[in-house]
Amino acid sequence: MSVKRIFLFLFCLSIFQLAFGQSHQFIAKDSIIGKYDLFSVDNLGRTNLCRNDIIIQLDKTKDTLYAASLKTMRPSQMESVKTFRTLVFDKDRGVISFLDNTLTDINGEIDLMQLDILQPILACESYLGNSFWVLDAAQRNLLKLNSKLVIQTRTENLYQVFDYENPPTQMLEYNDFLYILIPDEGVAIFDVFGTFIKLYKTKATSIGVYDRYLLLQTGNKIEAIANKTFKSTDLIYTIPKGVKQFYFTHDKIYLLKQKSLLIGQFNQ
Image (cartoon, rainbow, N blue to C red; front, side, top):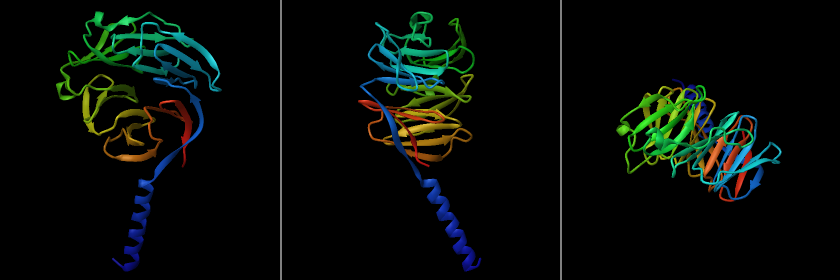
């Protein structure tokens, strides 16, 4: 190989490495001030903010649409991926509720323990119909229930996925995959039928999804992993310190901090 070709090869390699290693920086363009525990964003751009038992819904212009008190519930999870409803889960009481677009309870509180789910620790929506997922830590079962609360899918004996000393902290379904975050271990990946696929090793403290990517937050970095292979980091995003929850949409990025919800984009 000639010196000229070697130089050209090394130049192209350096450009590739530079492009791959670039970190997209978050730029805040708006914010909602206040101390909130959780938030969710629906497909119409409405934002739900939760503090203790109170949920406030804002439109795209940040005007308040509705407010509701859940009274006995203290949500540990809130999800609005379906336009017509918001899932609210109280881990301490093992209770789940579904709220409509006016934050009105649709079916009343659903006590999962009465359905023989002894220790529900996580819940999330399923994109197939009106079904939803529940993770039972006591029996190590992953369950999918339909709108009539009938178990459609049951994956048992998940001893290879997690143990009592290191229980999962987050679960969500997107683009034909179900993801369960296990602190200090990784993300357990299942298909939409509850079949275990693999454990992606990571020290991430929070996960999200967008398009065909699994998003992993570690400190002030978010890595994007393509779900085609689940092998390597394709993109890295830099976010402010102290972000405790994040959410990506096609035109906005939401970052929840201790005293505000930041709304913005990443530079190109």
